[in-house]
Every structure is written in C-alpha cells, then in structure tokens.
Image (cartoon, rainbow, N blue to C red; front, side):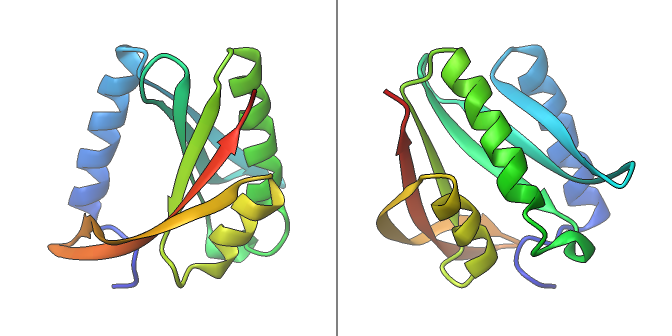
Length: 134
C-alpha cells in the first residue's frame, strides 16, 4: 500500500479517535467539497492553547487543482480568528504535492525528522513546516 493509504479497520479507528477529539474540543475537522462531492478532509489539531497542527487529504482524482491549497487557506484564516500564534504541519519528504500546498500557504520548512511517524508498523520520515500567525 502507498504511504498514507489505510485499511478499512485503520480508517475506522482513526475516525473513532477523531470523533472523540472533536467532542473534547481538541480538533476541528472539515470536509472538502468540489463539484458537489466530498473530495477530501482537512483538520486543525490543537497543541496547547495557541498552537495547532494542520493535516489534510484530497482524493487523487482532485490533485493538482488547488483544492487542498484553498482549503488550507480557509482553515488558516479560522485559526487566525481563533487567536492561534502558529501552526505546524508535516509531510513525507517525497510527497511533493503536499509540500507545495504548505509552501503556497506561507509555511516555512524548518527541518527533517527521520523515523517520525509509524504507518503500518514502519517508521516513516517527515519534513516539518511552521507558519507564524502573529
């Protein structure tokens, strides 16, 4: 399976945890729509009172259309309105489209992390981006 693709059971567990975090006010999750259909999702996870972590996905059919970039801009505006001071985001080093979304929305590359995130039992690297909102 490609990086980021989940099994049905992994997705069910992820959604259960997301629903619990939403109920606790620890994350904000939004659907991304295009042509009247849900084509992806985007979220802002709270890390402390004024720091957030951005995460998103868009179905492959809708890649390279600026959809994720526009969704990220909208969520970042919500973060500004809520008084966040900064947002971090990570991407796999080889995920150039995701990295471009971050760069097009003003994020700065601040470092690389080896063996940062476990996906299907294998530790994966990530690049770390930061956006100051103040």
